[in-house]
Image (cartoon, rainbow, N blue to C red; front, side, top):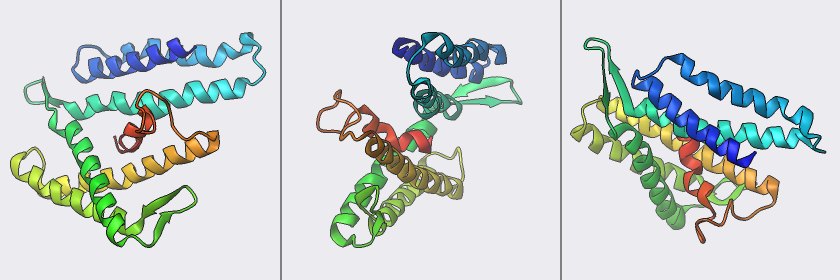
Length: 209
């Protein structure tokens, strides 16, 4: 089922892209819906001892990983109703990662210097309120720079986007930490040694997107 689940996530990404660029209508999602039905119904016949866990792993992977990456297309492609055309602009999806990177850097620097009050000690003992606020200030400061060079949104819309990314990015990071604690694992994988696994590199982005 791992291969089917990975192919399903890839199909969802391509389907959302096709829908966003007006290359296909909503029927493009029918195969993906059939996949979800298959993942549910197949457990009736596989006779595994813990079908609930299989449902959790298969469905959560689509919701937690597949869907956010697919939604990057919504940020990247924009329809102009006046000219019935679709334009591609990489700045919005890229800005999500810029805000996250700067927020993480700011949080680390400020937290190391003055961090005293734990943000969520039960889940992540190293994160502090001071660091999180400092990271948010850095990201919002960067949004003003982006607003100056990219006028696709107003300055306050850029600042609002930065704030949303910082808040949900922090929740995404904590959610992934909770996931690893529940599974009693230190790293989410061994593809990126020393980084905690591939999921650790994208945990903040998944929820922020």
